[in-house]
Image (cartoon, rainbow, N blue to C red; front, side, top):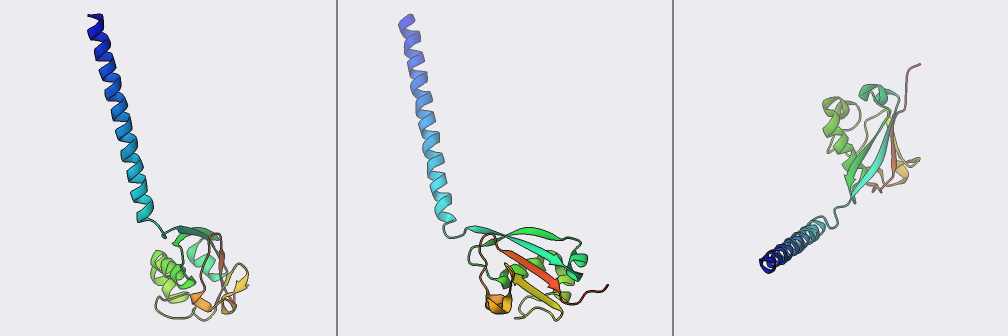
Length: 138
């Protein structure tokens, strides 16, 4: 009887070890599949700050947004236009147009976008984008 019980315990330990190894293998394969699916699609985080009219329009001073690696300033502005809708498109930037609306200026890390290639300027992880109105009331 003791031998039978020891045999059952050994069999259950062997099954538990097998199940553990199987689960480990499945998780490892799944992790590899996910990493190859997302290869080259690293998300970047940029800080977007708002000054003047746009700050009041959006009712916020800043936010952090994730964008895809290789994204340009135009891609970021398209994302913002999608988030904030018609008022943003009317006052700041309309997707498909190759310039910022009159009365607004944009800097990336303190440099005006005209010196960086305009809306085609590529963004990097940690960049600080500042959207500001050129004229504000007092």
